Length: 132
Image (tube, rainbow, N blue to C red):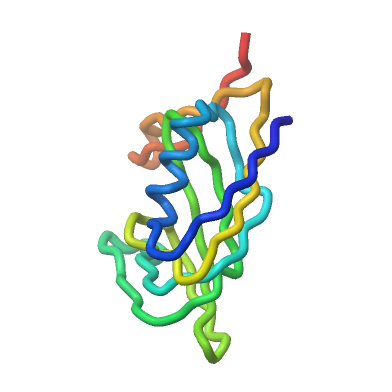
């Protein structure tokens, strides 16, 4: 397994920055090992909703999980506000870093992740291939 670490700075977009990092490092089968940080704006698509919601304020990133690949990214985030109220859902563009985001990514050297339309769900779902 390869391990990558990065720190995002204020005003950077969390998802766009992760996409760029994955493309720059040609990550084919990545996953979030750990992530902490804060946001000044969170854009999240809640469960079973078509539209994203923009939340303004100061938030702690309490969880970031999912898969990363040059073939597509699927991440979920949980954030907590100043009262500890937690919300979470599908990470979309528009999550802006407040002070920092410290992220550690693992990558399998034996696998390739792809995103392919699943006939049952109709969504782009994870397809896993063994490297030859």
